[in-house]
Amino acid sequence: MEQSSDKPITEKRKGFYRPKIRINWKKVRLAVLGLIFVAAISGASSYLTIAVLKSQGDLANKTTQVSNYTISSDTDLVNIVNKISKSVVNISTRTVTYGWFGRQSVSEGAGTGIIISSDGYILTNNHVVSDSDSITVTISSDDELTATVVKTDSSKDLALIKVSTETQLTAVKIGDSDSVKVGETVIAVGNVMGRYTDSVTKGIISGLGRPIVASGSTLYGDLEELEDLIQTDAAINSGNSGGPLVNMKGEVIGINTAIDGTAQNIGFAVPINQASELIGSIK
Image 1 (cartoon, rainbow, N blue to C red):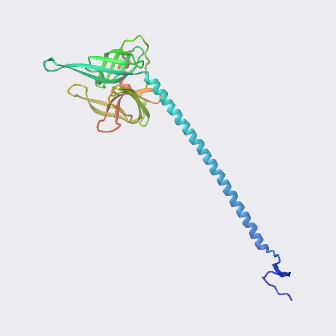
Image 2 (cartoon, helix red, strand yellow; image 1 turned 120 degrees about the vertical axis):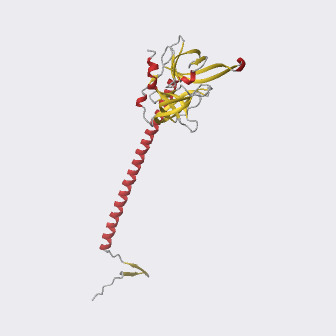
Image 3 (spheres, one colour; image 1 turned 90 degrees about the vertical axis):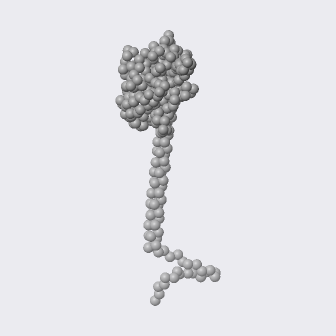
């Protein structure tokens, strides 16, 4: 009677022993199932890899689209600046005062203005031109023109002046300051420090309806209360006064008028709708 044994059967041949092949079907089945499992895992891994790569590809496309949008936005900004600069003027003022024993003193000032009609009407701040004996306006062609004050509104720190010229000037596009929203991108253009003409700064609308008490332009520093101003973080410096605050449509929505000297990048502009009476007076 044969005895079963778990040891492999061997065959002796020329001094070498080798195990005979013995198939264990249970192990074979387990091995096959293992291969199937590994194949399934491998397939799932490949699918996930493809999905990730596709997702990265989509992200790259989105990034490119964002980049293209940024480039387009910058291009729009440059176009707006080029267009608005044709309507921004530099204002130089000269004031003569007399002291003790008739001693004469001459002071000069600088500011900015915007052309609101092709025949030479210009809007600026009242404090830029008030009490001046002479006003000189330099337009984009570098021509210097003499200006006269037509009408002022000191309660809003606005003034309307006029130059005589045979050349048709380029007027700004007036916007609607009532539709302005906090967070909107804006630019300010002006004759900074009376030296850096057509200086451009960019920022956002930081707040609306701001009241301030600003120093006046008189010898004794009278105080002026201004209401319902637009606050912006676009850098505004001396010489920016009277210049435009412009939205991304190229529309003037405010006239830059003051800064908070105790802080950084807190500037204020008179909403353009407050100038409607002055603008309407030339029609």
